[in-house]
Amino acid sequence: MKTSILALLLALTSASSAPGSSGESGDDVVKYLLSKSDLVVSGKITNIMVFTTDRTFYLFDCEIREVMRGDGARKGQIIAVHINRLEEPISKGNPFLKEGSECILFLRSAQPPDKPPWREADNWFSVQLPNDSMAQTLKRLVADSNRTSSAQHHYVMRPMSVTNSSSSILT
Image (cartoon, rainbow, N blue to C red; front, side):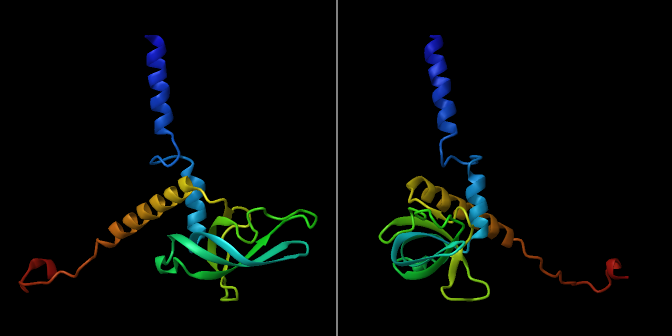
């Protein structure tokens, strides 16, 4: 009896802390990356060029498969991306950043506007392996954020009209 109750409690605890569950503390990092990003996409890297000095620069095209944050009309488009990474010149580079690889990209628009127009949103975590759980979490967080900001815009202050000019409030 004790064993089955313990197993049940363990199962309930595990289920409530599963990735993607609402309010998971692991969402904090993803929320932070989203807050720094103008565009979050999953896609396939094509036409990559890599330059190495004291840093490694990746210039590539990304064929967008899915848009998690940003203009959904970009799905199916190819965008130009510039990723700047601090890597040892002798390293083999980021294994996720090679022609034909699939990844999730956290991007910001280049400021001032530049070519290519999309840059890494974070030096360390802008490139992630494709992951269905992460994609679902990103969609949920963006939808939650949109609902919150939409609800905040429903409260509009309107001027009151005065119908009785002899009101004591105005004197």
